[in-house]
Length: 248
Image (cartoon, rainbow, N blue to C red; front, side, top):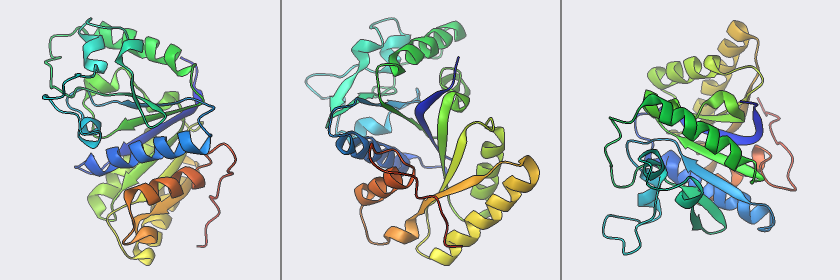
């Protein structure tokens, strides 16, 4: 599949991806608003074992109008187009809000889903893929290598940084890699984390790692505010450029 430059793949290497799912949702809403609603924005949840986004949207089993999801597509209940849930100017495809059992689905179904997803992406100006620590099966249908850029979310601890390093090196060099340092209120710590990781990535792969933002820059702020900042810094808004120049 050809790479789609308008796809942004968000990968959280930490254990809990709930915060990053909320961040991805607010980023997609900010992108849609920044484009004045004239250009479509799609947000898809790559984790097919669960749906954190469903909680963000306050959807539950008791919802009167149960929204469909990617899991329903894989179960051959609906088409991918029917799985879209509109929300604040964004078209959203949830992962598996109701924890339907997907264990018996043949691997080939995921490949078909991936092809259908590629076609669907052509209808959108911007596509955001929210991918926490998704299982291998879900990874079979959405690959980071198909994105134009990837936002990696890490914490400053050694374990998270190591996972971020391994993931970044797994990306094709054509995919622009960005780093968001979460879990810190200290800008110096965030800067040290980024610089050490950037040097390691440069020395071992020759690729450049770009700084997206850190939680320290938004201490006491909201997820929505940080999402707006990330969307601006990464050049995801219609009229914004990349603000990737670093002060360190």
